[in-house]
Length: 461
Image (tube, rainbow, N blue to C red; front, side, top):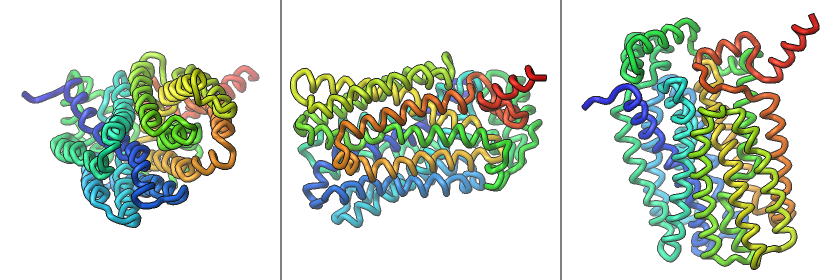
């Protein structure tokens, strides 16, 4: 039976999102494996940070390179290249016998993760209908946090087994992604951008409810007269509001501290006196909280809206981090204090993941004009991974210098700043076609602050 319409878009989004599952698993498994790696390879704090961060450096390189590759080869083939790198990196990391090989393997896995984070959300967004685009793209983030959760559960279950098995499990989803993408259609917008209008029409007719809807959507794509633009297009004033909103969210997604909690939660909690098994179980709870928050976020982006979701949940993240910082500053790691600490971590995880982590890939894939969407998304992913690299390299050092309490208070302040940033610069994209958003960029009514200025100017006249 040949799939079409919503069934086909669901299938495409599911297979593509496997890249997110790998993304989450390969970044998350290090938090459990690190407890073994530190002993086997005699890693000090700097060594642990370098092994953890190698995958982030690779992701930063991978996402920046993927933009040009996806423009030339197409979205689908770029995802297949990322899947092949996942396979190669997993084989090498599972068989590593030195720190150097371990770092190299993590770097290769990073290239794959960076490529997947850049292109999978674009591919899903460009093939999805406007009314379902939010939840389908958020499916990628759901796969990411599911991968993180699976990695935490795997780390706990294999805590007395080899770390090699922890890493090796990632080969199966990498194989599914590579083989699955071979049978999926290319992005209709990429086809249209490259002059393959009839091929684009055929794909749209397969993924839309009727031929009339597909033809009308294709007409809208062609009316914008997009052509492949160079990197310099991103610096033009009319594109700048999209760049600011999307890259701003990407940077804040990391600087608000979510991956600091994800990467180092077992280490932080173990050092605080929870014990290794309890620390690992706490990480599993964090992962479950991420999944819950992302499922909710997937519903909310198409019902509340992207911007509304951010503004409603970010204040909760601020309060949770203030409580968490206070718990650590007062050394509340036993009895009721331990439960307060765990509850604050869970609350922060739900509020932050359900807002910024849900929005980052969705907003990044929506806001750019087709002519430079792939390159713009490279900067979104680059901002995400660049900030992630800073966080992964400095979190343990921050905790050592400032203490866990001041570290979490610092993250609380960044979450408060994120609320202000969204209020001014992030537009609502719910229910609008990608072409409508491009027209708003062109007529200067994209960012909330710009629309407010335009209204004030009109009233003054």
